[in-house]
Image 1 (cartoon, rainbow, N blue to C red):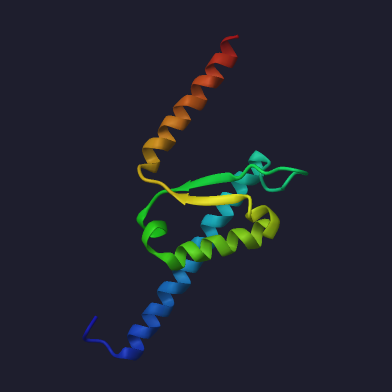
Image 2 (cartoon, rainbow, N blue to C red):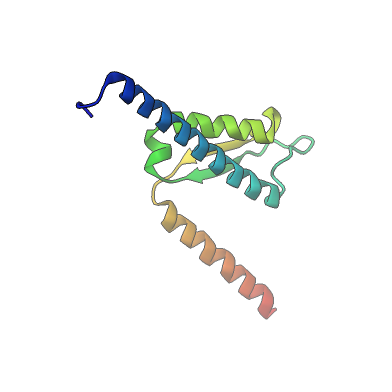
Length: 115
């Protein structure tokens, strides 16, 4: 945006950071909601198994500020001990993987209903 002043560009950069931080916090809240539903929001005695959250998309992959804000928000919402047991990893083709997982879980429920 070469036709703008340096001050205007700095304001835009700051505004983009605010929007990214808000988006990361909203994403973290959604992740924590799912973890709570699964009972993975607390660390049991002697539990060492990590929970991996697969994240797809260019925002998480390329915008390190968003990624750091998301991880900070998860730590805030889950607490330090529990957040160490949660790992957010970038994945490619998340929608395809998600569709396959949904289809597999649905077929399990159909088998349970038939028996």
